Image (cartoon, rainbow, N blue to C red; front, top):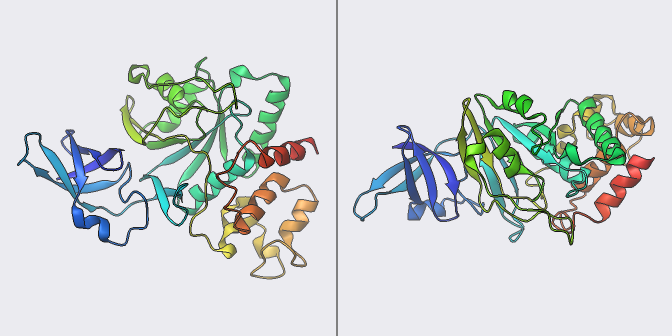
Length: 326
């Protein structure tokens, strides 16, 4: 039988078959030994072959094969830094839910997500959520960020899940596609899914007052079939986004505004750091490239992986604030 993985709990996989039936499945024992370095060899969105095991009281499935993935998105495992974690696969659009201060989403985190999505062939769109809570200063900050990313070609949406603003525009983009919602805990992923499909009634929680951080409400990634031929993968809140398997020479290719300038650099292997006659550094000096983007690039280039899972509300935020003031 062939099916699509709709939920993964680490040991069990909830698989929807081609005849629209759901089965609890496990991985075939030897399947784990095929050199897979990921913490989760099978991810939500995977198309798999599975056999039914009718020797037990409840009919379960045994997954025997994963079909080739169209794409997937990964990050470094937080607890096992030498391994990767596949967040989801076979995605048409990756939506990153961004909040300005409730909780804070830093430009460093946004850029890491965008770079990873581009590297793995996934269209990325930014959703600025909770616009109903903005004061004048927060609105200015949000519009500044939106301008920064729209200038380099990324689509941005302004949404309020609680007031249902921008939700219909979002739904139009999702029709007929598999979409993934990602972001920090507390940015409103589950609330937004509920706004799109109220009958789902996904669990939501308030923001922790102590640290203005979200509380995890989604424990495992899960796909949902919504009306209007919409399929959405809701993911657990991501605190950090560690980069995976990226050579230094290719990092700038995933920054669109750097890539278009690359051929104007004097050296073909220019890393846009100390090299003379660098078109990217020239554009930076002329304020044609956002300083926050360049700082994100340097952090990725320098392998600043020790800090990607530390306090996201610390130095990145301070640097981001200073950038916006200048």
